Length: 290
Ligand SMILES: NC(=O)C1=CN([C@@H]2O[C@H](COP(=O)(O)OP(=O)(O)OC[C@H]3O[C@@H](n4cnc5c(N)ncnc54)[C@H](O)[C@@H]3O)[C@@H](O)[C@H]2O)C=CC1
Ligand SMILES: O=C(O)[C@@H]1CCC=N1
Image (cartoon, rainbow, N blue to C red; front, side, top):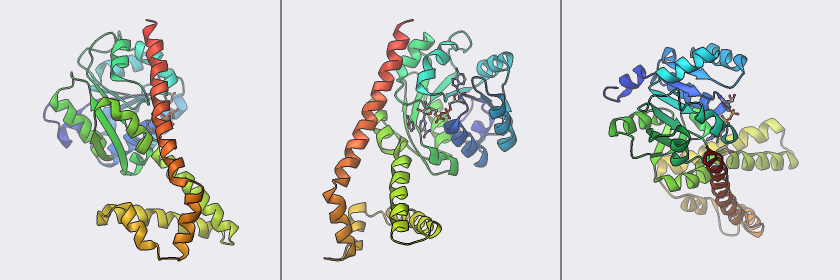
């Protein structure tokens, strides 16, 4: 592969091995940002040809829907993106052992799965990029943590970063911190949606129509995130600006504090990271049975 700028990524053959919602979020971002040509992207999954046809119709990518096409897509790709669920990962990766060439780049989005387990399943020191993206990549606002095996060249690091920068922002972290990224941003959209669900329900309880409660909530969350992003101020400072002494916001925040809202959120994130480690350990044990 030549210089990993946008044009060279456009020329790379990318194979999504596992074509579910996370794979779609990334491939849609790549296609819409015109970073990769749809004709250079192949998608394959376990058995669902309908899903592959749907992706072809939506984005123009190439479905590999027979065993022969799957093997050809995997063996000829410059980059293979592992996008299956953690429970399916060990078996799926083992089958690559005799299909891949040793220098093909593997990019994993799989929660918990370590670089060393992937290499063990492949039986060699394959170059591996371990990532933890999130579903906001669909609209180009993803947040992805990235770490690299030592066998990934500087050029390929740039290629991987370009791919994920095309669908949002990236943070390069040491591999042991990928679980922390999982806790904060990989699963993070779900926490925000959970909060929004509560805001909408409370608005309806107070008499707003569901549509009005939803519209006000959505704009509030968008506006608050954009305020932090565009002013560079800390969320704490911005919160204090909303909170008049003895006013309505103070009453609301005191109520949340009584329910230990922030502590609950912190413990949730720590538990999420711990769960990722547990899932990774399960796959590592499966790999050790080889
Ligand atoms: N959904 C999310 O918000 C995020 C998910 N992830 C990770 O992304 C991965 C995929 O998650 P989702 O896209 O949500 O799951 P999904 O269930 O939507 O997609 C998984 C896909 O993998 C395919 N698959 C399973 N075994 C296979 C095999 N042996 N060969 C080929 N294809 C196979 C399935 O057919 C399916 O299309 C997971 O490992 C998850 O940890 C990471 C960050 C965020
Ligand atoms: O819930 C999960 O396990 C995946 C990983 C990060 C977001 N979703």
